Image (cartoon, rainbow, N blue to C red; front, side, top):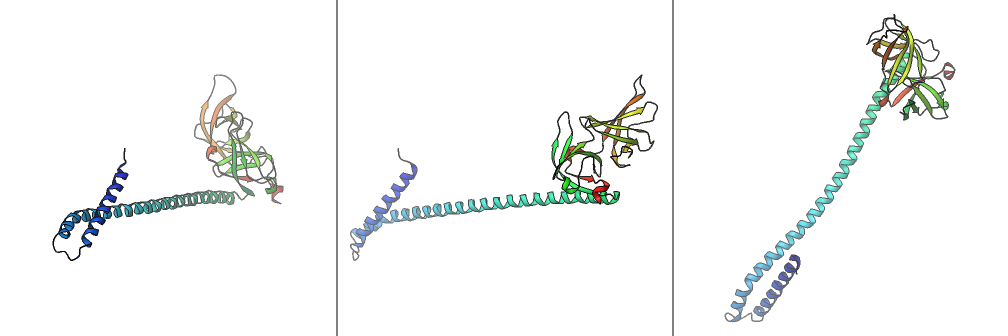
Length: 273
């Protein structure tokens, strides 16, 4: 019926009342050497001892409780500070990675000695029918339809739409994409078409042309869109049918489109004026 806490409080009160009563009795006869005073002292001493011990125990619990509360608050504050430090560290790591990528783009731009504009990838369309990117540079930055988009790993695609601040890029893996290309070492010419599903096909390769897996494919510069000599991918498979004048050549793109975050848009000659 009664909680442990209530029983404890009642016991403390009883001890306190008994102690007060005993002290009152003993103090009423301060000059008594015998009689009631020794008896009262004999009776009250154990109660005083128990009361003192109980009060000490209660004080220790009380102080312990406040110490626990204080420790809990300190732990909470420390966890908050640790979370903030982790967030700052993550931000520093992101900046470090971004700085490394931007330095790579700058070195590539300087090596190619071309007028290029760096842009951030802000959106991707990975539908079954189209392969496109949205970048954060538009006509106000000189970006226009038809301009090539590249990274140090190779050609990404070309701009197909441009607004004031944004542009859409058609990837070389899109089925509507085509780039005039060469096998780098043998100079065999063909057209690289998007095959969808992250691959490309080397079209119009004569079955008598020597094409082998591992050969590099580069832009020929003859389509008037993509500059000559930019890397596009590596031959991954070659199949020759029993009939037909062309061979079927699969090409693995050099660019990992899933992880693209920054690109370079090659400006038209008039855009640099």
